[in-house]
Image (cartoon, rainbow over all chains, first blue to last red):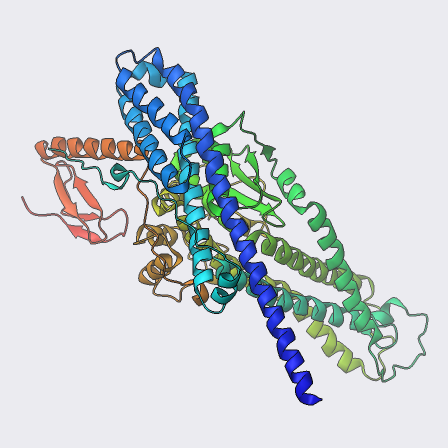
Length: 185
Length: 430
């Protein structure tokens, strides 16, 4: 009788443990998905802002056709991206095109004094920040989730219920990492 | 991150239990005094039974009643502040709600930090029409939190610095500090209220009842007087104890919120720059603040009247210069980097709980293009100024504290005092 009770207790404890780990994994996976949707929202917002920006700036920057075309092209590529790695590449390129554009704007004081442009610029700056913060928090969540499904004992539960590792979201823009050199000579 | 929040919750509970013990003890002692059978004050209040003998009472019902009274007081204050504490605080500081339409930049920055911290809901944003630069966060939980900044802060800081301040406030929300401040503030409020009521009633009754003070003092009177003395001492000491406990933890939490801000923005210089500007500010002190709400603000809203050496025990915030130094000394942006920098600067024990010190590589971010450009321009201006001064035969001295002194040629004395560290420096002979 006693050994039977012990076996029953062990089984109950094990089941409770598996349920706990499974629920924790589900919660983490939902958090990762939620973090990804946050990035998605901000990327969409960036795509929506670009026509606005181009429209406001066009009148002032007649000789910068190339810059505008680069932005528009990068935008349409980014909007057509299908998965995380494609999106990484396209969004990185779009970010680069936008920062180049912002450097060119420095040469147009009239444009920089335009109230409309200033508000679009603030929105764009903020959206860029939001993308990078959303990415930051998404990557944190992914790291946490991936650690969980690789570590003992949660890896057993993760494997038997097919929890897959997630990809990090890195914006692939080599220029972003370079330190700009400033010299005073 | 989660380890830190867990450690914070544990600390909050310990603090609450300690403060609750202080409150109940105070209630018990005061209640005992009002016992109509044996309490000193009780017999003073109820002199209609002059012949009743003081008996050895098995259960001190009056003491328990005192405890119940203290608990009720606490409960009522708790109900009020839980239902509308943040609203009362915001209304008292005359804060106005802000939307994206009237302050797009502030609103955007709050939203950025909300995303970085992965808060479940957007905190309500407020502006306090006050020239003193300051900010605070309040609310019960991350789902219903509020952030308020003063107009003075908005006017002085650039985008990166404002982001640093908002990140600090969002960290308070994320670390559940807002709940802790609310709970501890109520507990502190009840203790102060109870002891004040008691001390004042003592003062009053000693004036009114001095003629019949010893009318019933047969047997056990001595013990009662001792109890009375204990009660008076307890009523004076308890609020002080509670204040010290409250302040000790709130200082620690300021450091942790700084660390959290650095981790969220990946850019400690933003907050450091903001703190520097706030520290150098000359505008009058914030109009609507008291000692209990002071720990909620990003910097101590009370301005020191003189250059006093305030005891570390009684200050609600860590010294601002120390906070700036720690932030500027960080090698990365993780909690571990903050902790390392903290021990480097202060040589004290780190405020970061050991469970939160996991190794994680969190690189620092560069300043935004706008700030970098301004920095460049400022540096250029300084260099041009130095060239001009060199031509005009200024003497250049570098003090041990790192400051560069530029002494004009018409300065006649042969010694000069460093404006920052007050060292006396010798001028080279010409």
